[in-house]
Image 1 (cartoon, rainbow, N blue to C red):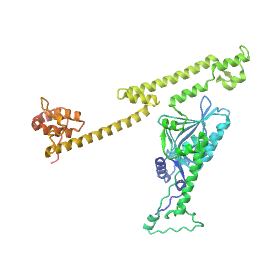
Image 2: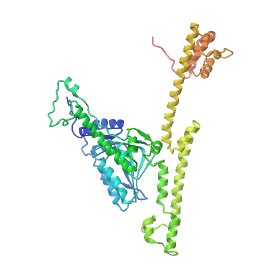
Image 3: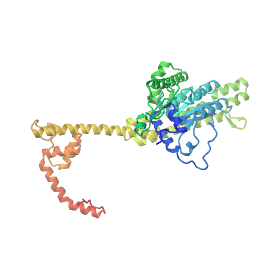
Image 4: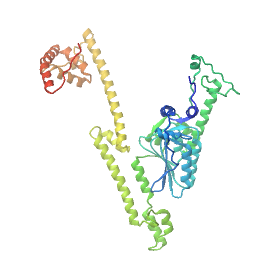
Amino acid sequence: MTMEKTGWLAELERDPWHMEERALHSFMAKAAEVAGRAMPDHAPQKSPAGYDVEPDGTAVIRVHGTLLKSVPSYFARWDISATSYSDIEKQVSAAASDEKVTSIRLDIDSHGGSSMGIKRAGDAIFAARSSGKPVTARIEDVACSAAYWLAAQTQEISAGPMALIGSIGTYLTFYDLERLAKNVGIEVQVISSGALKGAGVPGTRLTPEQKADLQKWVEDLTEVFVGDVARGRGASLDTVKSWATGGAWLGPEAKRMGLVDRVESHQDLRARAAAKAMPRIEDVNKDESAAGEGVRPASDLKDRTPKRGGDTPMTDAELKALRDKAGEDARAEERGRVTAIRNAFGQKDAGFTLVAIEKGMTLDQAKAAWGEVVELKLAEEQKARAESDKKLEAAQKAAISGAAPIATGGDPGGKPAAGDKDFMALSREYAREHKCSMRVAMKAVNDASPGLHEKAQGQWAADAPRVHSAKQAAGLKPATSEQ
């Protein structure tokens, strides 16, 4: 029997974590699954650390998956999403000194990660703010725990309407295997130089002193976490401590609390970036006038004006055309989004459609939200129907025992009337009116008009041969029962 994991995975399990709990459990399970697999003869080489530079000069640094001090090379082979703190630190520092880069944006999609290495990465992000280049973060889907620690070090955080943000805190897990060891005849003895040394050795139980020491470690790490978030967000320690419950919030609520600065769709972010990249034509004209009629201040244009090719700056007309096209593209994309949501949900629920459009949801996000709405409605309807069935059945029992003058199973005024309607038609009508199941409705109609049920049974029996023949003619196999 192996009592202890060894190697890289064991080191991971001993680390304190700044990560959303369910995501950590999922990551550890997958890491354990692939840790013992044979590696291919030619394992893929990790590409050199780097970042993409957008046309406007923005360096985009990916902060995706589980965050670790270093990422094993085989993670890419087995499709485990992870980012190393050292890569983040190197890329941010390089972008801050890169002359081609005008701004830095962290593209974050992570539930968090290990505590080892995060402080240096966070400090590098905060230090990049002094480069004079805007340093921002974009959270499309999730930035929890360690990922939010990094996001908080930027100057501005933009989040999607459905982004999950927060989960500030630290936790550490130890497995008490003392009873398991004793059950298989193993007694683990730890020879240590102090009362706190050897805490958590598999097969032993933490002493109260060891547990208190580990609790202090977790609290000290959280204190650093809270302090860095307060530094980055310009918030008071008390405010950040009120966030540090381990809870997470969607974009709009996170903005109201102060965890993020903007809630906007990806399309809005792109349109805002495009508009921001364009120098104001009025400023260019003012510079030209100051330099003399017909003379362009070339040195200034070299710094601020997009180039058409080589060293030739764009003309005012070309700048205006570029700006107009960027705006039109953004408007067309927004019209497409709104039209898609209206087509999908307009006839189903006008109120939901309006909310989805106003919150900037994409069609996929709206579909996911609609699924939750439908599930909630179904649950409410089922609950209401169950409560109605319970009341009607109780009334039926009371009527049978003579405790109440209700012969039909419904309210006194709700007695089904036979009229010209058949048994099933009356049952469906009763179910709709009383919001109950067909089982309860059929019982109520039968109590009120037994003759109708008998007549329906006779009709069903008479129709059986005809139904059987129709099924055979349609090529349907008739139902059979086991003898």
